[in-house]
Image (cartoon, rainbow, N blue to C red; front, side, top):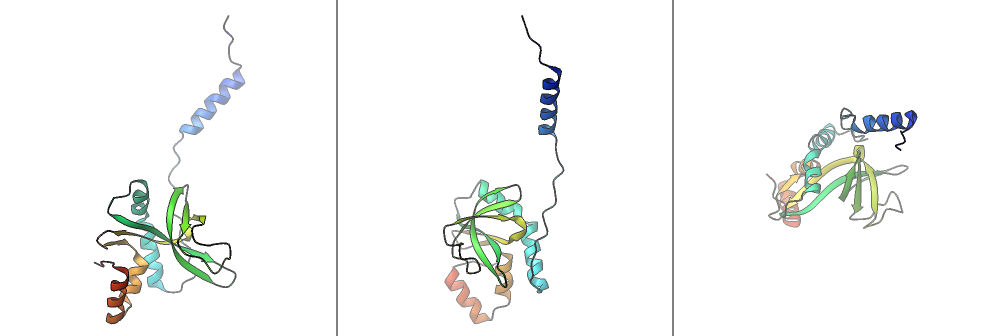
Length: 165
């Protein structure tokens, strides 16, 4: 003899199935919060956010020519902030998990190799460095480079090995 499912169980299952299949509209990327009064810096951050899909794709399927994939995070302390390059390990639901490459001085617990969850709004920039030194992204780096003297530019390129287009 076959038992039928109680109606409330059947309705619950149908509701759960419908909710799990519902397509929610994509939410726009959060506006990065910076306390920087420099409009060119803020424009560089906005450009990085507008092209964030590039670094997300690189995380999913890194090209063998990539020697570094990084995101710049703003860590804020009680009276100061630090902008630090980190290595993204994962991204889910608007939050990056990043590995610190260097220590953070505004928070004593943030040391190299530590994994930290960072909301997208706290990401300032992204960059990918290829084997030949080609820099993809790095909008805040490019801004800083534009503002350097010719001597500083030469030294910067020599130290980093970047190829700036």
